[in-house]
Length: 149
Image 1 (cartoon, helix red, strand yellow):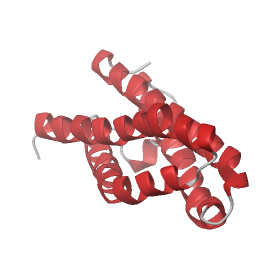
Image 2: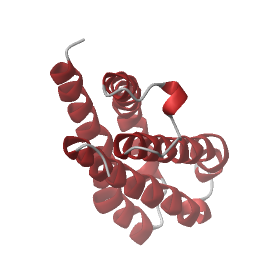
Image 3: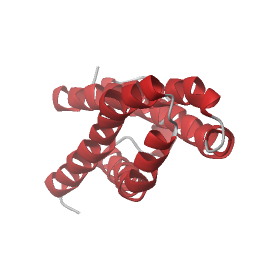
């Protein structure tokens, strides 16, 4: 697939993924915390999840394909030797952190949050962490244009 098309799909997917988390973090989360109403977050998650998870899947696919186009194939992941390897590997570490938070939220926090608003602080930590990681991934991705960091 053409690199430019991969980049466009990647950027649009990042817009959906990171933008959705920024919206959750700055619009819905403060209201949920103020009102101590976990259903504000749960309702947003229910609406956002199909679009957000599709965007995340596209990010992973296009990111890997673009890494291969830059010569950073699987055997060079986590080598951190060249600037582009550092960038790709750093984004992969952040992706693994995102997946860890997603699994924790999905199987540990959200089931408890459905019936217990006292779990809002723990969910808040997850939301803020994934949002910061997403923003860092966008920033790190911008370094690819300069050959990495």
